[in-house]
Length: 153
Image (cartoon, rainbow, N blue to C red):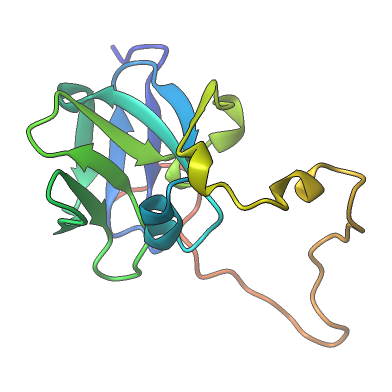
């Protein structure tokens, strides 16, 4: 029987999938290293004990991003998947790699000293907003793995 708090996720291409066996603690980190690792303004992360992260398909590649930490990612598509202090008891998966990221809003922010000063402009209503729609005459078919587990190919 699966725990009711089990969460699943994986990379964009589906080569690497994982399950979280405990309810994660969700945070955001603004530090420069997280900005570069995700290619974004901040890293949204969900922390569990190392034993509560199970790789269910494939194995991620690893990059030691500092003298104290490593990050896992998909070698096939490049999706950032984790942050982990070396020999740490906890590991953090990228919230965006979860199948249902909207279910885990952040509870705390780290690395505030590196937060970009204009991030508050991203609050709804402060900048014009548009829906993602293809250009007229352009048909888009997603090649991205769906947001759920699938049988191995």
